[in-house]
Amino acid sequence: MRISATKAVIILLVAAILVTGAVYLYVRTQQSSIALEQNVEVLGVEVNKRTAELVSVTLRNNGPALILEGASLYKIQSGITLVSSKFSPPIILYTGNVTKVPISYQLDKEGADYFLYLFTNKGTAIRCGISYP
Amino acid sequence: MIWTPLTAVMVILGVFGLALMIYTVPKAYNISKKISKASLEERYGLEKQYYLLSTVVWVVLITRIVASILFWVTNESLIPLIPGAMCQFGVNQAGAPYSWIDNGVKLIVLLVYGIWLSLDFINRRVKGAPLMQSLSRLFLLLAPLLVLDLALDLGFYFTVSAVTVPCCRVVFTAESPIPCPYCFVFHDAPMFIVVISCYGLAISLVVWSFVIRHFIKRVPEIEGVGMEAIRRLVTLALGFAVMGTVALIPAIMQVMRPAVPVH
Image (cartoon, rainbow over the protein chains, first blue to last red):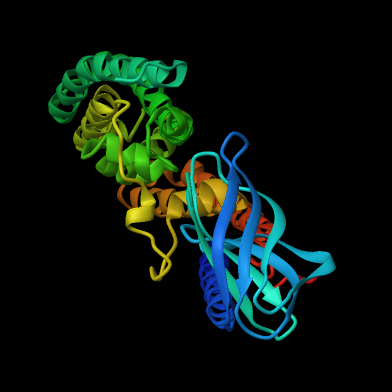
């Protein structure tokens, strides 16, 4: 079967739309399936307003001790995880303790809303909402 | 108005286009009205008039296509100058309502103006300019869109000012099913600019080829040049579609960053 160039263009376009839609749905589903940690309280988020850089997050663990393995920054307006990294060495959140977790992520200078996810060894994540500026 | 080099260029292109429009529209009307009843000598005179008109229209349409690309660049450059604007959504809020309509118009200008340009390209290559009347009429049909395009640009760039605006965060929240298109395309997944441009060009080229095919049926004199043009346009369209598909791979990689850290 011979496909004309016009048909090939239309097929490629439809395929691109379907693939992009499927990828976006997959990313959103992956994002919404993250189980949230209930026993950790976010006390504060420190942002360097001059450089628009996320500096640290202060947490209080009200449950059993947890190990933080990594973090990721999700931009709400674009629905994309902008950056993710592992903590080396992992950070331990002891029961009842307040812990300042250093994180160095660049935020948009113009501003945006974000979710910062801190992933624990239990497979759950602590979610902090960040609105900058 | 916020005066920057880019907004100044947009205003100059708008005024320039409007001035050329005032020159070309009566000429196009004159040609389309007289051509059917013209004697051989009159036809020769109209043909000469048409070539001048065609050259001016080429300048107008090409500058409008350039302006439609500059439009996005200019709006992006205005973000830091408008308090509260985080992306082009905020810039559009500052220039509402002209900006929103202008966004829609800018998406179709290449497609629509290109129809005239491709037909005129064929007309210039065929002896006797057989599409002269059709092109003059088509230009008159395009005139409202051209006026709208120019007026919206001038309205928008004269309206936009450094007022505090609510940006996309009021519309696109964590619960929104779709992302802010400006944040998504222009800031966080910029490879999609290449993808959208390539597919946009591919669609435009295919549409132009369909229009040429339609005109070949009506004016058989252009068949030879027309079929060659169709062949080239469709090949080029396929090339752009393939480029868009190739660019889609890195674009998807930009979106598919893992939510859970893996390294």
